[in-house]
Length: 387
Image 1 (cartoon, rainbow, N blue to C red):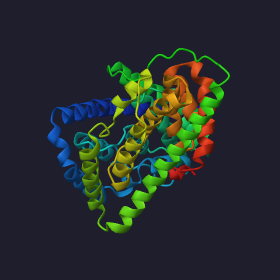
Image 2 (cartoon, rainbow, N blue to C red; image 1 turned 90 degrees about the vertical axis):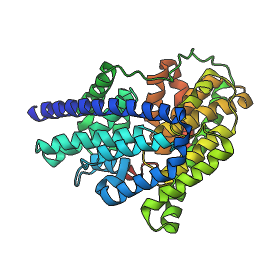
Image 3 (cartoon, one colour; image 1 turned 135 degrees about the horizontal axis):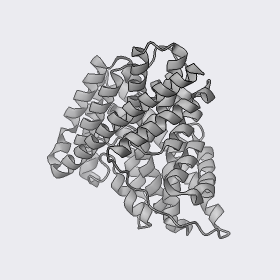
């Protein structure tokens, strides 16, 4: 009983620390995005920023180079824990990347920061390895709760990616997820892009429309993961010095930007606004976001994959809705979560995420779309460690 209470206490402390660093991270990303938009010349620094980030990780990163898959692995099968340097490195690398326009997300960075600060506190307290493993697993929920404001989604994510003794981590995960969310909320940060959706009208055609949409989301998720891994492999094969790889990615991103514009730089969360509102979205929007993100992450920029996948799925849903004669907001909202959950092979997480963001009336559509997307995607392995 004392061990459980101690775990819950340390999970709450870890979640609170995650909330503090996540609040600073979210504010920093907002500053970086607004500054880049206000000073357009900053995007031309992207190759130089890539060199800086690449060199920092190559020479100083150590085990922090393992990224989100390494945190998931330590929460599943503990060996050496999560390095303390991971939090400041992913924080700084993500912010400077966004300042110059790298097409990366934020949730993956949050999971790394959560695992790093939580395990650092557990290490200082000299907790045994089995308790540190449970706290690292719980920190995955804390990262979701703090940076995206969805604690139940974080708990579902933890349960799906950490199989060993995962039920023992449920109570710590609850403490971590809600502590992270409470701290961020208390500090005054409010999440956006969560429209209120009316309940769908269940006409005969709607289940078939959702099934077809789910196939599209799953195929896009599969394409993204394949392209991401392919670019990483080609970069490793063709560019021998790792710090030069994000330089190449930065130059490629600038070339694409000259051709198609700046809408796909950074988080690109503004692309979701017309999609959720049911406005017209061109079919190439999700594909271009996919390409920009695969180049950035595949070449060595650091950040997350989750929000870019939300953008891909949301804009794809709005783009295909007219052809399917389906309600665009419904396809956009369910698709935003389904693209991520299919890419990461965590269908339950996607369903919980949809319901937590958009309401219980999205449960059945989310189940249909999520299951179909998962089948269409196969096992693409966005987070290879948990396979």
